[in-house]
Image 1 (cartoon, rainbow, N blue to C red):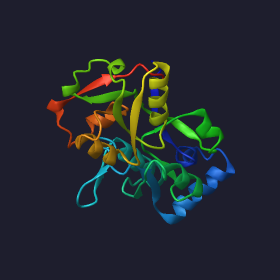
Image 2 (image 1 turned 180 degrees about the horizontal axis):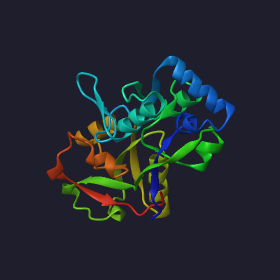
Image 3 (image 1 turned 90 degrees about the horizontal axis):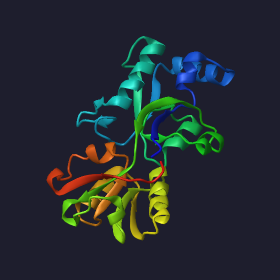
Length: 222
């Protein structure tokens, strides 16, 4: 199975530090003049970017944002976290609403060429898999023919799900939700018997009963 790059996109921030072009230099100047780095993160993914009830952000992606701020200002606190949905993330980067995007997003050639984004490097390697209800008795993704599957809309994961069922001549009913939180709620409310995502996502779902679920790695290309 091809490994899915769960990566960090940046239209400027790492390139900012290198100042490799005039556009990057202008972005760096704007950040310095502003006195803070605007860093796009997810709307809440445990272990990567999550805010507590006091607005304090923690996680792997959050730490990267602070590292960028430390490199520019010698102060990791000079960062503004901007929570973004999958539909907002790239538009915010293109419009300049954020300086760097540090959230779960797959590195693809089309996103670089069509969206004119610069992927600075791979932050995290992940795969694809199903989280299924133990009651289904499924031990293989090939046993999910005809099942309802939750997935986050507007993602490469949604496309990979379609490819998997098509390649294996299987049918399924998709329950596409705009955010990972909504997909979790739909799955937990039994609207679907399975949810499809990078394996780190279901692991990061705090409200799903672990005793009633199991993870199945899919064999679809990612």
